[in-house]
Image 1 (spheres, rainbow, N blue to C red):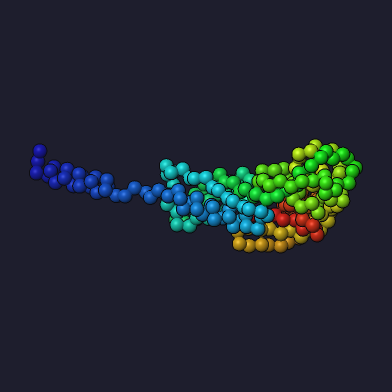
Image 2 (cartoon, rainbow, N blue to C red; image 1 turned 90 degrees about the vertical axis):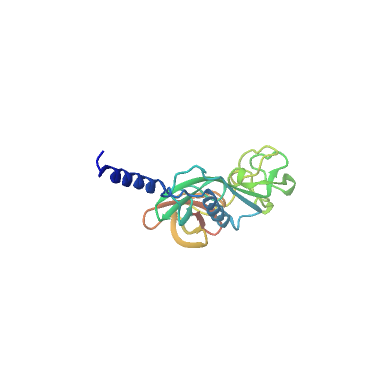
Length: 233
């Protein structure tokens, strides 16, 4: 060994030691991600009828994602603040990544149940109905919650006693007609946007409507009385 080998070896060892002392890339803590998703879901569910509760699953604690300084929650296409759903969380800074968390929104309120069998053509009276309390988000779409929505209307199809009463069980006047110009209200976290479009199908209040917007885009929302369609973002 000559006199130059020892300093070179010593320098290499010192360099490796310095590299080993560098901190590993910071991992994304799961709890801020879950909290951001939960706040978003609670804001989206605000205004729903009854007692609303929201829950969000946890992010993988062993994730290898870099720590994020700017978390942006959103709904994936087709998701909404209702029943079993998903919330997306996008990181915009300092790197870009996206994760999806399972979530659930429960809406406990009173709804209408058929007290005795209904036959096609009969007119619904108060004695034909009773109220029960449960998770509206777990029931069939367009389940009715107010006797005023049903009493005095004709039954369209036979309905067994004990079944939740739905709008499509009755001959209800349409809230939106096919071809009608409708007001489209888009609701998101902390904002509401109104626009106009043309309904591609008719629907009673609470049923889904497809609407063609002026630019040609087709959106789907829930029909409301007065020619209004609500779309969740």
